[in-house]
Structure formats: C-alpha cells, structure tokens
Image (cartoon, rainbow, N blue to C red; front, top):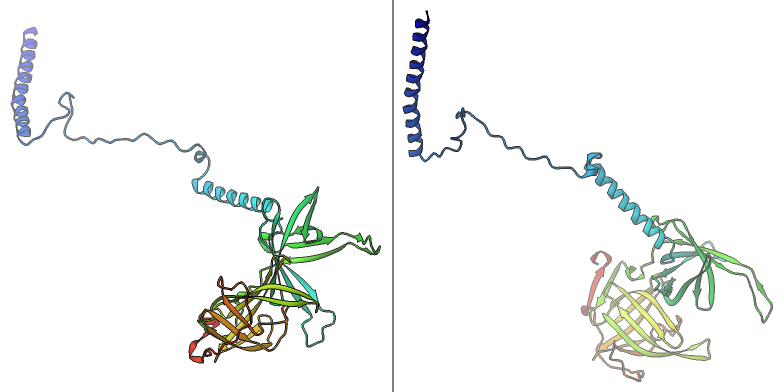
Length: 363
C-alpha cells in the first residue's frame, strides 16, 4: 500500500515538473518577442501579475475653504455683494448724505401775479464741495442769470452753521440725498438791530433737492451760428450803479456753437461775478437773442474784423441787465488792450451765407 502511494506521489511530482518545463520555453519566447517589439516590462518583479489590469490614479481631495464647508459659494458671494453695498451706503450716509453739497431749489411765490402771469419762480442754489476748512463756491441761478459767491460751513456743538456773505444761518438736512428726496432747512436766528432797536423773529425757509437748470442747453428750436463769432470775447466796461456810482468791470461774451451765449460781468474788488445766458440766432450780420427763460427777443447788428467784434446796440437797457451790448468793441480773450475805446468800423457785415443753420436735434 505504501509502495503504491509512493508511486503515485512520484508520478505527480514528475507531471508537475514536466508541466513547468513546458511553460518555461513559452514564457522565454514571449519575452524575446516583446523585447524585439520594443516592449519593456515594468512589473517583472511582481508575481501573479497578468496583462489584464487597470491602474486608477486617485488625486488627494482638496480641502475646501473653511467657510464653504458650511455655506454654498454662490450664496457667500451674494452676501459679500450685499455687505459691500451696505457699507457704501453707510459711508455715503455718514460723509455725503448730510452735507450741503448739491443742488437745492427754493420756490418764490408771486403774491401779486395776475391770472396771465407765472405765480411762482424757482431759484437754484448749487453748492460745490467744500475744502478742508469748510469753504466752497456757491452758484445761484435765477431767471436765466447766474451769480457766484463763497460760502463757509462750520459747527457749534450740534448746530451746523452756514455763512453767506454777512448772513449766518443754521441748517439741517432731512431725508436721504441718495434717493433724491432730501430737504434743506435754513434758519435765520432772531436778532435785534442795535441802531434802530428793531427786532426780527427767527425765520426758516425750506429748499428741496433738485437738478441745476442747465442754462447752457436751452437754445432756440432752430438757430443759425456764425463760425467767426464762436469763442470768448472781452472788453472793459463801466456803468452807473443806482444812477450815481460808477462801476468799472470786465465783460466777457462766450458764444457757443450750441446756440447759447453767456455774458459775464466781473470786478474782483467788488467781488462781482454775474452772468446771464441767452439763446441766439444770426442772420445777415444781425444777432437775435432772448434770455433762456424768456420769449422776449432783441436784435443787434455786429461785424467781425481783425480779431475784433463790434456791436451797434442802441437799445441801452443796462449792466445789471441794463446794457445788453451797447456801442462797444470786444477783443478775443487775452488780446484786449489795456485801455479800450469805442470804435467804429466799415467792415463788411456777415451775410446769410456765412451762417450755419442748426436745430436742437443736430446737437
């Protein structure tokens, strides 16, 4: 029995040995064939590895920003935008909403107006930004005219004080300027005149937030321009103030190709800086003008020669709207002689062919 078992064992060992010997040449042949084809084995030292395998490379998971672990990124961005807007509004409210800078409108009621007349008019007060000392420029617009002056804002405890020339007001702003519904309240304190003993009670006026009148854009519907007129002209002028005080001033005429001209009156010693805006049109050497807030027209003749603009105006209305032009010669800006005199010239008048027709739609 034992002999039979031994024989079986020997037979099995011989079979296994023979099978292994048969496999070795086949493997060697495959290896030689692969090397001939340029194949380089990479895993020869791994036992039991077959050709049927798939290698999957797994990247390490990136860590999310800590806040994105608890909130969606798009929601986080929306929150950031909202907070930025809130901060901007807060900064505006603190530093801009309560400042006097901007345009304010005061409505004057005309108590004596007839049914055919306008029963109220509006004055526009445009405060430019003040400097670090609280000083700034104020422009007042009324009935086509512009006046510039200086203002100063200070504070006394909780009171905000506005100084205009020799007048002093306390002021406060209600509403929100950002939304365009703010109101400026100016209060003139009660006072007693030391000379007459007359007492004036405290008085408050209200101005509403608005936009400047933009007189420079109020031309006639149809107008002609003359290229020789466009630009700024100046002359030295004088006028009687209240009929007995002679006021000398520089007058500048800025003629724009938009169909609007601006006449400025300046005197540094008196602090005079006024202007009036007119819509105009030209034809055959004649200039027709009307104040931008009126339909009343005036027509004057003019000539342009050798850098000089001469008007022949016999209307004699006045400086503080008393003389529109007068019989005066103007010079291009910067070329005005030290002493100017009234001059006459026989220069050829501008003809209709020299003018250009424009309409508001062309601008």
